[in-house]
Each structure stands twice: as C-alpha cells, then as structure tokens.
Image (cartoon, rainbow, N blue to C red):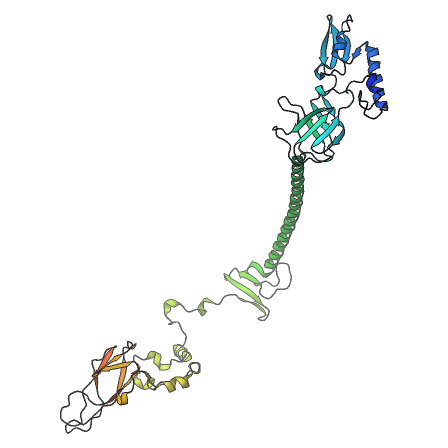
Amino acid sequence: MNFLTKEYVWRARETLGLESTDPHKPKKEEIIAYMGQVEIAATLGAVIVKTKAELDTVTDKPDYTPAIVGADSNHALSGYYQWLGGTWHYVRDLADSITRLVDIDGTGNAIRAKLRLGVSLSAVEFAVFVPIDNNSGAVTIKVDDVLLPIRNGLGNELGPDDLQTGYPAMLAVIEGQEGYVLLNPANVEAVVLAAKAAAIAARNQAQTAQGKAEDALNQLEAAVEQASDLAFKRFNKLYLGAFDDDPDTDNEGNALEDGALYFNSPDKKLKVYSVDEDGWILATPETSDFLSKSNNLSDLENKSQSRANLGLGGLATSNSVGTADLSNKAVTDAKLNSAKLNALNGLPKIVAAYSDLKGSASYRLTRSGNTFTFENEQPDTDYIVQIVGGTLIQGSLTAVDNIGIRDKTEQTFQIGGLGLRSSGGVVGATGKVDVVVYRV
C-alpha cells in the first residue's frame, strides 16, 4: 500500500481485509504520514481519493485544483491530477522514480522487499537495496506483491555471487527489458576493485622502487665521483707531468713516492723515481743498449766472447764439421735419462722371426721356398735381416758364409746365394734356417 488511508492506517488486521492475519497495532510513522496528507489537502484545497473512479465523481472545482489518486488497483492511474476546463488532467506519477527498497527478507535467490511510504511502484525507474544473502543463480524480487526477475544488462539470468551480502545493489527499469536490470554485479565490482587495489599497490611499489633506485643512483654517482677524484689524486701523485729538471717533491709539495714518473722535456725521456737508487732514473734503456735487427749481430761489442758465452767455441766459424768432433758422442743430458738411452743404443728391436727347425712356428713371417712374407706389412723402409743356419754340404764345399738376401721390399724378401770361401758353384740355399728381422 503506497497511498495512506484511514482504513489502512487503523486497520484491524496486519493484512487489510484478511482476518486470518495477526492483529495490527497502528504505527506512528504511518499516522504521521497520513496526517501530513490531510494537512496538504486542507492547505491546498486538494482532493484526495483512493481510486480514479472516485475522483471522477468530484466535479465543479475551480481551475487548477489539485487532486491525488493514491491507491488505484491500476498503478498507471495513481498519481497527481489537476482540474482544468471541466475535467481532471493527469500531471505525473504519485512519487519520485528513484527510491530505496526496505524490509528486505527472503533468500539470496528469492528476495522480498517493500516500497517506502508514498512511493508508487509504477513510477519506480531506479531502486537501491542491500541484499541479506549471496545469490547462487537466477534471482527474483517481490516488491509489494509484484514478482519480477532481476537480470544483467544483457538480459541474462544472474550468475553466482552477482548479489552479495551487505553490498548495495542498484536496479533499473529499462524499456524492453523484463523485470529489473542489475547495474553493478558485485563479483565484477570486486574484481575491478581488486584490480584497482593491485594497480595502486603496484604503483606504490613502483614509486618506492623508483625512489630507492634514484637513491642508489645518487649514491653510485657520488661513489663514482669520489673514486674518480681519488684516482685522479693518486694519478696526479704518481705522474707529475713535464719538467725541465728533476723535481724534488710531488705536485702537492709532499715527498716523492717510489715509482713516481715525470717527463724530462729537454731530453724527451720518461724518468721514474727510485728510493733504492736514491733519485730519478730513466724509465727506458738508452737506445745504444739495443741491438738492431738490420745489423745481423754485427753490433756486438765482443763476438768471440758472445760465442764462448753460448758454448759454441770454434764450431760457429767452421765451414765443415769433422767426424772426430761428433762421432761416438754419448748422450749426457740427465733430463733424457742418458744412461738408459746409451744402453739401448746397441740393442736392435726384433719385429719378426722365423724358424723351420723342429717345426717351430713363425712370428709375423711365413715362408714359401726361399721367399719370406710379413704377416703384416713391414712398417719400416729400412731393416736388417739376419739369417742363422743354412750350413750344408754340397759337393766338396763344407764351409759357407751367412746366406744372403735379395729382392727386398717392405712386404717380402728372399734368401739365396752363398758366400763361398773357395772356388766352386752352389745353386740356391738349402737346409734348415732361422730368420730374425730387426727394426733399425
């Protein structure tokens, strides 16, 4: 009930006309509001009725007489009217279009609410209320017994937590949309607020970091400046600059330090101060102390002494070297283990052996007649073959020299021919032989 009547203010039951409801105790705020309506009507000479039908029974009023239709069952007929030209003219809705809903109860998805006194539901275009519970899905709201859905701006049902306890919800009536439109979903607003808070925190952190970075940069600049100043002072203390004569102090009048430098302008030379030498000495040797490569050692002061210092003696001036000087020279360098090298000098290394005596097996040699072949190719281009045995009796010959070798290659060699101590001819080599091949 938006428009107050005496029947409503002093009704017997809580719900007007419904005897099954609890007895009603008149409320001071309703009485005050009703008396206010009566005072306004008396002051303005206004007509106050419940329905438009009742207003139409009132006629013959002076022009511009106001009237109020407060509780027509057709909400569109409730409102302010004015008598003009022999009829009642509709002026505007009974109440303002912006209101706050009160007496919120129900559940998060099925909300019940009431309008404030004097507000017409038909006039409401914008309403605010505070939910008492979070919603979990689609939501309806019943305002003064009129049930309508609440949807989002796209016309879709609300999602979970679009309404949240204690967070004000703003509803709008928009032409073409069914029910009420929620303008500020709480979860979206929460995300926005969280993002805003995060952005503010990030900005504050960035500002703090920037301040620290600027402080660090200032400290670094100061440290660099201080280090540069100290380095310059140190350099200026060691390198004194150009002078005509040896200076007695550094540029600040202090005692000279060991290693101080200055450039002697007349001599065009760099000098260094040495405490041990008790004064200034040249930082570089005289050019006369150097050998010129174009002179090919001809600028040595004493060539004989130089050769002697190098251990060359007369060998450096000889056109040839005789065997007497270099023959039978043993290795004497201790780093080369000369004793071992000299001992191994006379010991050849056996790389292959063969014997056909008593059926002995061969080692890296095979025999076919007088031809011996290495099982693996002989790695050396020069080697010695020593043949033992081969002594035989042929004709009247009983004494022979070692059997010779011929047709010698890296892969094979042949034995044949006898060195005779007396005249006569022997063809080929016969008998049992041992062949030993040495690496040289």
